[in-house]
Amino acid sequence: MSETVAEGGVARKARREKRVGKTASNLVIGIWLVLLYVATISISILMLSSYQIQSRIQYVNISDTRLSIWRLIELSNVYSVEKNILENRLRVLQQMQDRLDGIVARRIQLDREYTQIFDPYYQDIRAFKTSVETSYEDFSFVPLEKHHLSVKILYDDVAQQLDGYSLSDEHKNTLKDLELRHKRGDDVFRNLGGTKRNEAETRAEVDAYRFALKAISDQIRAGVYGTISSTQPFDQLDESEKSLLQDAVSEFSSLKNILWKLPYNLAIMPAEVLVLFLVLAMGVLGSTIFITQLYFRREKYQCKYDEHLNAAFFFSRPWFGAITALSIYVLAKAGVLFLTDPSTQSGSATLSPFFISFIAIISGLFSEQAIQSIKAAADKWFKNQDPDADRWGVGLSSALGEKQRDAVQFAEASGVPLPTVESWISEQKPVPPKMQDILSVWLETPGRRLFTDIPPAKPAKDDA
Image: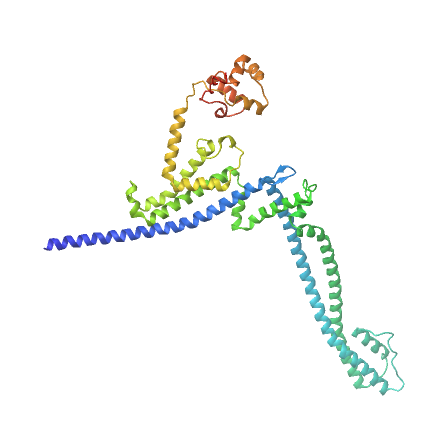
């Protein structure tokens, strides 16, 4: 009985430990999925938008010439430099204006202070003159020719006319008080005069600086259009082309203000490198979709997988999807997987970013099926390759027309008789392996576009 109880306790403990382990695993996987969502969505948006902008810019035609991303960088840099120069000069102008405002404020303060001194002083001077003239019948002041606003002139006029004249003690004390007051007022008056001269000089300096900035200010305020209009070789473009170019430069320059210039740095990457990053990001996105579905239905799909669906599986699956997406993209570009018309593919062709993203997402989402497709394509390709077999020159005629060459030139260069070369071109005879390589190099065209293992169809009897 005790043994049965002990065995039951061990079983319960084992089940409890299993539940705890499963809960911890689910928590770790859940945190990983959340981090993966944030990173994958952010990177996918950045890659897709950057590649889309770069692809669209390549189709902007200016004077029948496609606009390159490097020309946009040059224009954007010119615009940024001129804009920074203007901003620096405007800051200097603002500093000068602030200094002028400070001087004006000081002048207003001194003017108000001097007015408070002068007005009562003027009244006291007039009262003193009246008192003196009333007290001394034999004396009268000669009036000033015009009204003066200087306390010094008012005092000096009174003091000079009373020089040597005998005054009473009361009048002497009053004159002494007026002397002290005029000295204090004269100090304020001199400061006010110096401040007014400084204000006039500074105002003239600000106006001259502002006038010098007018040309570049108008150009920059006109936006990129002003820069383009005055920059060689764009000054001869018509208005529609300048407007188109302005929109492209403005949009491209705005990328510098987003996420620490990350979209801008992505957009100026070589297109081939950017595409590869886009493929990897979308491969991870596809795998993220797959493992999210699998996470919530793990028990249902466990029987379909040989490995245990633990944390290690969920951590490694996104990178497996990225590698698979890259492999599928390489095969598609090589023409092994005919996702598009192989005849239209070329090294310079620009694929739609959404098509590339679609390939990468489904490759990450269905990585196992993608691996099987790669294996099937590899088996078929290796099975059909025989480097020592004669092959038919199915593309020789069109390649000679494209390269503007003829059979006579090749016969003279290679030493092969002209009738033999013409029989290769007309597909009357297959081309030997050595001549296949020579023709491919001479025509600067991949051999897979020139030769095939499939012989030409024999004409029907009615045709004959």
